[in-house]
Every structure is written in structure tokens, then in C-alpha cells.
Length: 199
Image 1 (spheres, one colour):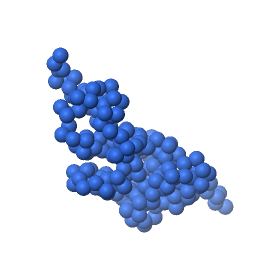
Image 2 (tube, rainbow, N blue to C red; image 1 turned 135 degrees about the vertical axis):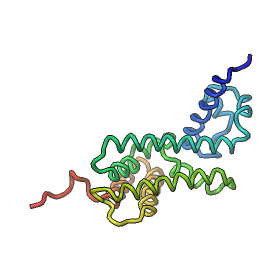
Image 3 (cartoon, one colour; image 1 turned 90 degrees about the vertical axis):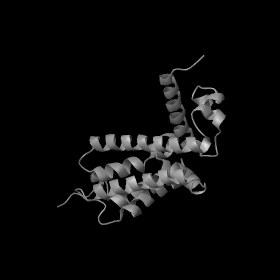
Image 4 (cartoon, rainbow, N blue to C red; image 1 turned 120 degrees about the vertical axis):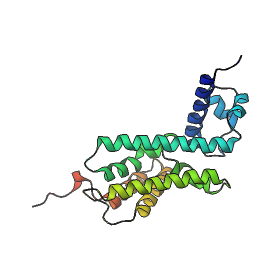
């Protein structure tokens, strides 16, 4: 039975969305095409009607993951406009982000994998993601209350990504929480609730 153009596009988006989640969770080499297609509720045979290769899907899935992250970031900053840089840092360096790599940022989930692959298109996606964060951090750092001081956006981003990676390694250990709290405080300063009252 012939699939309509609309249904074919819907299936393609379903594959990309499923792959974006599973690749962040398992890594580029941690899950195969057959498992992605099964999780998407589609047959394996339909894969090559939509993508040239698994590498092609990896690029599309990474682009989709970045778009998701941008939307979440925009929504989060809209909810906390008073200190947007702290909001970004606290949402990024958090137990929620640590514990759900499949729905999180591609940088801590897949950057090491991408660095090992000889795929310029995939690397370009990661470069674009890094540049996006650097631009956002630079913009938010210049807004009041300027909690990051004069730190370079690249240093802030590296600390944020590194904190998520390391906290995933130590997971449930109390060290993970103290590590993340230390990074948030280092970048954004003490939490407003914990600041001493001025005399």
C-alpha cells in the first residue's frame, strides 16, 4: 500500500525524533538502525527511503536535538527573566539534566562521540551548537545582575558541559550534587536565598 506524502513526512519526523532521543541516551554506536526504527514504530525497510545512511540520520537527529534544547531554553528564560544567566546555568547543571540524557543537550551526551567520527557534517552541527551557547552566554552575561562577572563565555560553557558529564559518571553519589552546586556557585555566585543579609 502506497504511503501518502504527508504520512511519509510524518514517519520521517518520527524517526528523527526517536533517533534524537536514543542517540543521546546510548551514543552514536550504542544503538542500531533496527532498534531506532522499532522504537519509532516503523519497519526497518522504511529507513533507506528516508536517509542515505545512519550517519545521515545522526546529523538530522543532532539538529533536531539542538532545536529542542533551544526551545526549552527559550521557555525557561521566559519564566525567569530577572536573572536569565543563573536560570540557564541552574537548568543546565541540574540533576534533571544529568538524569535524562535522552532529552538533554547533545554536548555532554554526544560531543566525545562526534569528535571520534570523521564526519564534517556532524561536526558542523556540534560547532553550531557550541556557537549558539557561546552567543547566548555572552548575551546573558552582559545583562543585569551580571553574576558571571567578566568570565569568558567559552570558560562558562566548558564548565557547564564538564559538570554534566562528570555528574553522570558519579550519578547517585552525593558527590554529584556537591559538584553541580559548586559549578553553579562558581559561575553564577551564591544562590539569592543563601546570600548573607546586608547589615
